[in-house]
Amino acid sequence: MMARVGEVWDVAVVGAGPAGSAAALGALLRRPDARVLLLDRSDFPRDKSCGDGIAPHVVDVVRALGAPDPTEGFAPVHRLHLVGPRRGAVVRTMRRPTKVVPRTVLDARLAAAAVAAGAVLRRHTVRSVEQRADLVVLDRTIAARAVVGSDGVNGVVRRSLGLPPNPPRAMAVALRAYAATPVGHEDEQYMIMSGTGWPAYAWSFPIGDGTANVGYGMVLEAGTASRSRLEAELYRLLPGLGEIRNARAHRLPLSTARPRQPDGRVVLAGDAASLINPFTGEGIFYAVRSGSVAGIAALRGAAAGRIVRTTLQRRLGAHFRVTGMVALLGRSQSVVDAGIRAAARDQMIFDDLVEVGLAEGRLTGAALARTATELVRRLPAGGPR
Image (tube, rainbow, N blue to C red; front, side, top):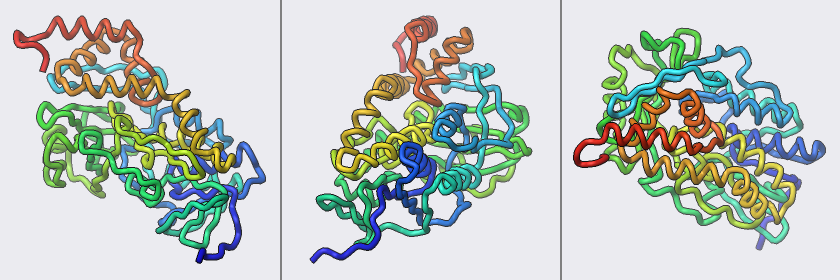
């Protein structure tokens, strides 16, 4: 016998991080009178393991949803410094600066914006998802005409659709911490790639108050990813790094193994849809972009799944093909170094790489040609490795 449900929401969103808050904002932008329920297992503010780097494209999406800039008050970071696994390097000014905003701040601001727009935020841990003919029922008591799952790759919503987790080749793991900003990197986002355990890199992203978000990440397929190894590699690649605090490890489901969005009233966004850039590990832009699409689509009830699938394919399909190609080519350290050296020679190529790594950009023919030239110039006798 089916459990009786009480109030029926137009949209229920499971997970109130950037993807979930963007979903609520998207639904309410399209239909201000919609009844939108935003559920999260934690109270806000709450921490979330992340690199905290926020591209300006994230702000563009949030503002288009009618919400205020969630990065307001944080210092812009204009320079990006990349060091390749074979020591190729580029330091350039980005076309538009990024900001580094701790997730305790960012997520709370986005959730507050969703509430201000009309969403109801409740602390609740969802444990079951039941699809009925005309409703989706959460925990046998909460009913909605559609549900957005933004509760992560191992969340209950994705599992309810029968979708498997990412395989090791498309899952990364990272250790994030906070520390005094490393000397020499006070005004730049710094990423140094490791020649061992490849693909892997360490980062230092300055918040602007004398501290930085620092960390080390690697693809699971590359080897054992114990906490002790992650921390040791972080110190090896950032020599002189002082004491770290609030270290937390997390897994990153890469978009190279994103699942096919099923038809129906249950849709996925952000990490739950395996939307992490395999080139950089960036996920906030994908979260707000996919969340906004999912929230608007959810207002269409049974058509939501089809709309999310076709809309994301139209908007991001070409970009996903580029990042997939970059991830495949990036298994060669020589190719990665060649791309970095090409970016050091040409601002346009640098700009292309930033757009691919932080938003929804694509590589131009000129970028590919210059990278190939750099690769040939430095090829060892045995070819690329």
